[in-house]
Length: 368
Image 1: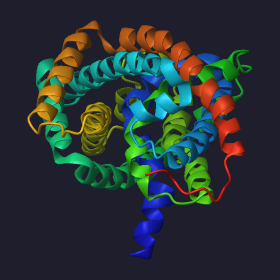
Image 2: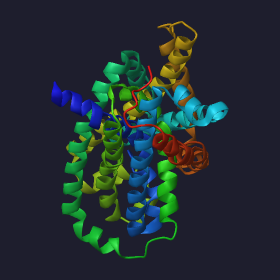
Image 3: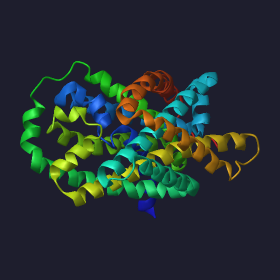
Image 4: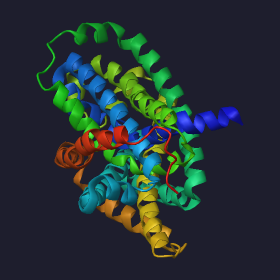
């Protein structure tokens, strides 16, 4: 029981964040190319380290503010942080949610087509059905699935890294210093963190167990490494196939084909498919919780039928947008959303938010 409580307080927030980030953040490898590998192998590593530090810093401030304010859905949290301008986050969040759902649908279609030879739209339909089913399970089902799948993911990525290093170790070492780091690695690391931090809302509901500042700060500090270690294990093998891997729509497929194991390729893609389901379910669940919070403020409850209706509607829009293709969605869509989230979330929470934390006694009990 004690171990379970410690896990939920210190590690669960990070695993939930990692679960929602991965599909839109580095699941296919395309995102790592766009934000990191474009700065060269060494610059990419520096950018990745920057993202990790920003993740942890923002998570520490966010978790503590959520505890102080008792704000466990994004509507109440950003009302406290931004005041009357809270709706700016919602506008950007909905835009990013639809974009990430499109990426999830597109990646699922390409995985099913490239790995199993199935029609693209079969993959899109499959992920839509799975996401909808998980959303209907509610908080407890989502937390359990996310936690369990994260351990599966870590095991698979570690195996993947060891295997790739055995096959590509010499190329990784040679390419690491083949060219100097790009001059924009710090900005790229911040940009990557900026849009990914927008998926923090699904994590807020898991912070209700936090009772002290120590708990929130430790959990927040761990969030960055928990989220990005699998990305590092993926990025290093990509260096071994640099620069040709830059043009691949789904770099993970290129690396798996290099390993030459059909069985492991299938296992990897199935786990990746599960992470796509996690991301879609987490984003939609957070939006449903926002609607439920509004209903609660009005002294009512969110009708049970509304949750699946919202899920189906959002997934349908995402499936439609997926027709634009994975590379264009990531290259154009994410870049557009990033600046907005840096301005309305990252900067305010690290300035105004930190100031409010300093002004609040550490012994203050969370609001009801």
